[in-house]
Length: 187
Picture 1: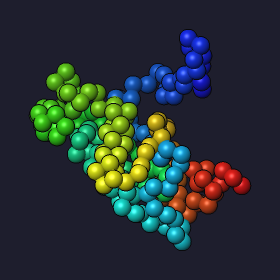
Picture 2: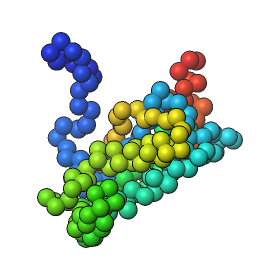
Picture 3: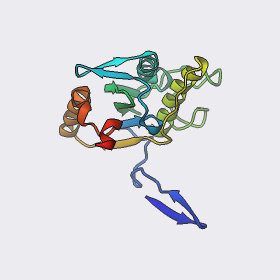
Picture 4: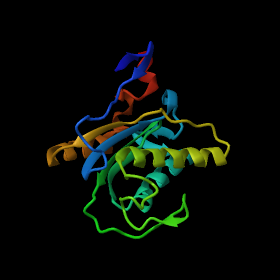
């Protein structure tokens, strides 16, 4: 919701105010392209057919745990103009020493004052994912941009998890009715 601050409108905080998104938890995220442009491919016969950018978006998604060892991925789908996925942040996982490619230093563990990457929060994970896809497109001289934010839902129980997994799995079959399908905006 937009609020007025110093005579300018600003978009308010969209996350659950009482929740620390660096805590262990399961999250359902949706990340849309700018203008909902279909950069990732097409739905053909109710199946997603990824193009070059879509394939890279999928590869970058699967590489998230390499950069954030406290993350476990669950169901996900790359759609024509958005990505849906379930991310489990597990801070009880044993700390694994890893080499961080961005800073060329050993981070020594998942969190803490010696981690130059920060908190390993959901926002940080999503920024890294979006940045990786954008970097690929820039290197290939491909036109591409993300919407500035992402959507999330804290998954509270097994019933919600089951329903969200089904939603993600069946998303391509429901594309004609999907609210992210730009063709539906003009009907």
